[in-house]
Structures are given as structure tokens and as C-alpha cells.
Image (tube, rainbow, N blue to C red):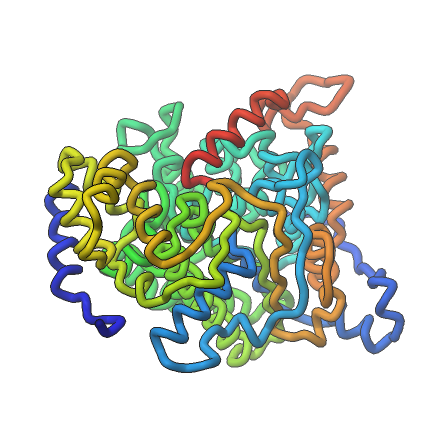
Length: 521
């Protein structure tokens, strides 16, 4: 069967779904320190450029080296070409991912290493192990006059985007994070000029279809602070690829996460892709800084590679990695065409799933029309009987010879059953539904300008590199955060209650376990 010859059963399956259905800071210093290995003045100037520049930082959440290998093999089968991933020609090194509390990090601690250049405990949102806030590269960029942005395919309040523009003692405080992202209750005021992603639920009260624990309408609050807001595909299209964007901009395109790319492609009229959001965000920020002395800093996350790893779903994961690669290519194209110098750095916060894809059968993965998560939801909505399960296996996975035993396993296990079946047939192995301590890759648009990241590094070194490239002093931002009184009362010790109550080690462990048993890594 040809890779794209699935229109009849895809259209049929999609009909099932229809039926079931971001204050300026005065202190900015020029940093001159460089890694020991770089002694020459030429390299110093290269790694710490002068003048206006843009920084694009991309995070492929949960993507380990094997994820790239499997996506490469899939694309080679799909296209017949040898060189198929843009990422491959930009690999410069690897990152070690452990957190301060565990050899295996979560996304919050992993991304805090990028945003603050510091190790912290699993679950911390730009907060250190002593529960004090740490200044982030985005906050430093904002203080220096850069425009700033966040793009994600998960909830924009989720761990990785959150650590750049919010501070919370637990990643679970997403209602609090949503407020800080639009400048409410953030000690430094509004830090973001652009937010695009999912997670509308944490910006709206229950009475308006949201999931906040209070009755606050954060979308309305954002508008009162000057934000323009788009909340659906037509609103996104009205931005005209960023040309018509008015900053600050809040764009929320799903109540929770934007669907897996393998599913989203059939709902392109509902949800924008990561590549589309990337192109729109870069154009909007570039236009907004055209006449400024400073450029912009943006973090773009391919969020759901991680979720596919948690679900042990190889078909969903290859589509997520390919979608990230396409967004990476769009960022490269922007840098080549834009008049302002810039750099693109990309890495992962951790690997998810313990993937082993050396024998992966790409034709099996290519025959899948939908994710296991999606099929599991459809099966549940139809009562979970074996006849429905078999039809979904055939239409959704492209497997037409499933045994009764395999179908019964799907009925019993739902989404996990679909994922197990396609993993077995595609000869893809997984060692866990959680994260692993595997080293992850570092990519760059310019090996010369990012020579400090060549080789193997701690994840915190990536954060330090970003701060140096931006010429911002994160310690100054941290002192600013810790020196601002957030209550009218004088206290003997600083009041950090704006970051939410610190959780005990046991509570954090329980939250970590819950995430590893779901698709929210």
C-alpha cells in the first residue's frame, strides 16, 4: 500500500469522530565570561555578538536520539530520499538531563535548567530547591528591551513554556501560571509579547467552559491589559501569517492540548500546526522589532513528542518528530531571510519511553491513520465492544489480520491496547511509560556561533549559553525578583506566596507518578 493511500478509511474514521464528538528592569549588564575551552578573542566575539540579534530556542519535549532515528527511517520510507531530516545536518552535541532531585528529570526541572541555567527539583517552575525564584533568560531579554514569545502544542501553562515567564513551586499550579503569563501577580509585570498554543481551559472559569478553580476570566483580564486575543482557527488565519498580528497577542487554540499531528492533520480547519504557529510568531516578532535596537527571544516547543512517548505510541511519535523537524526548517528559513542576525538552538528536556527503534517497520507506522489516544477515546465512546475495536484497528491502525486475542487486549486496555498492538507489529520496543536519563541531542543553526555547546554538556550550560548570547545577567534578574515586596506588610523574610505553596517531597513524588501514568510529562 502506498504511504498516502488511506483517504477512504481515514475519511470514514473521521466521521466517527464527528458523531462521537504573556515591567522593565533597569539592570542589564554585558557578560564577558566564556567557556575555558574558548580562549581566542575571535571566539569570544563570535559567541557573544554585539548589536541587534534574535534568539530562537526550540525544545523537542521527550525526544531522544532513538526518536530521531525512527522518524528518519519513517521519512526515508515515505519519500525514498536519504537525507530527510533538517535536524541531522545541525547536530552539534548532547545534553545530560538529571535534575537536583533525581537522575531522571521531569519537564519542569529540565526546562528550568534552560531558562535559569540552574538545577532544581522535579516539578519546579523557575524556582530553586530552596523555593526562591530564579531569573529566566526570557525575563532577562525582556529587561534588555527584546520582544518575547512562547509557542507550544501543549497547554501554554504546561511546564516547559511556563518556566520562561512564570514562577511556581509546583507545575500543577497552572491557574496561577496563566495569570503570571499575562503579567498578573508577576513581580516584574508583563514579560510576554506573544503566546500561541493550547490550554484555554486554565484561562477561563467553569461558567465559560474553562477549568479554573476560581471564577476569574483570564482572557478578559488579558484583553483589559491590552492583549489582542484569538481563540480559534479563523482567528489564527486573521493574523495573516503574522503580518496582521497586534502585540501583545494571546492565541489559545484548544481547551487542553492541540491534538497529535497524526490526528490534527484531518482537523487542519480547527487547529493550526506547529510549523504554522512558528512562522506566524517569527513574522509577528520580527515586524514588531523592525525599528528597535533589540530583536526578540522566543521559545518554541514541540510538546507532544513527550506525550506519544508516555503512551508508547510509535505512530503518533514519528508524526510529532516530523512536525517538529518542519518547524525547525521554518525557523532556519526565517534566519536565512531575516535582516537581523540570529541563532537557533534546539534540544530536548529529556527522553520519554525508553524507545528502542532499531528494527522499526516504517510501513506499519505509515499505515496508521490515527493515534492510540484518539482511537481509545472513540472506542470508549462506543461502549468498548470487540466489533468496534476490530473496526478501529483496521481503519485506525491499518492492521487487518488482528487475532481475537489482540482485539480482546485492545478492548481491555483501550488506548494502551492500540499502542501495544502497533508497537508489536512495527517491532518497536519501549522500556517505560515514564522519562529516562538518556542524553539528548543539541542542534544549532550555526556551529561556529554555538561552539561552546559542541560535545556533551549539562543542561544548565544551555541556559548559560542563551544568557551570554543575549548579553543578559540572570543573577541581576534573580536579585530583582527576590527584592520586590509582594505584600504591603513588612516581613522579616521575603514573601514568596505569589508562587504558590511549596509541596512536600512526598506530594511532589505523587504528582510525578501521576504524570508518568498519563500523557502529561
